[in-house]
Length: 198
Image 1 (cartoon, rainbow, N blue to C red):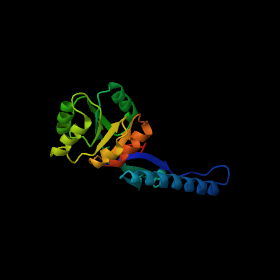
Image 2 (cartoon, rainbow, N blue to C red; image 1 turned 45 degrees about the vertical axis):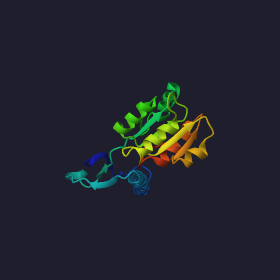
Image 3 (cartoon, one colour; image 1 turned 60 degrees about the vertical axis):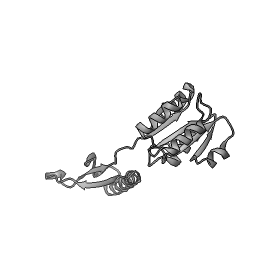
Image 4 (cartoon, one colour; image 1 turned 120 degrees about the horizontal axis):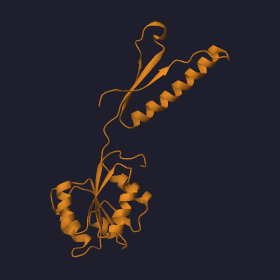
């Protein structure tokens, strides 16, 4: 993404209250604000530049152009495997406005197919599912070359944290799940910055 002019910052002019004094205060405030903006942009992997305008006449050298480059936002795909449409709807609401894209499957077959096709960055897997339970799906995901490297977070009402971790899951989320707990857990395994919430 090329440089994008953000704003023109005119140099402060004299005021009624001692022109030179006010000019110095305004310049110091502007420098402080520009420093904060530069740090924010650089924290997100961008670049921040201030360029003097090449004007002519009275305005020559009296304004500056700020340009910045920001990396494209990375979308993190999260596959939720749960037969509860209410839970999927809740998680979708929790993740609205963040850098997470929620995919969902209600059955083992759907989960395995979607995991292989969409290659999610993270999988949240329920234990209690119809026909085939979460433990069997976990084994199938771990045995498939396309999905074995995806971090899996078990999510259940059952107190099975120790078993889940022993079977190689990345983390365990007990139900009910709060928005803060969900975002904190996803942030530990997401491949890069995704949201200001993090």
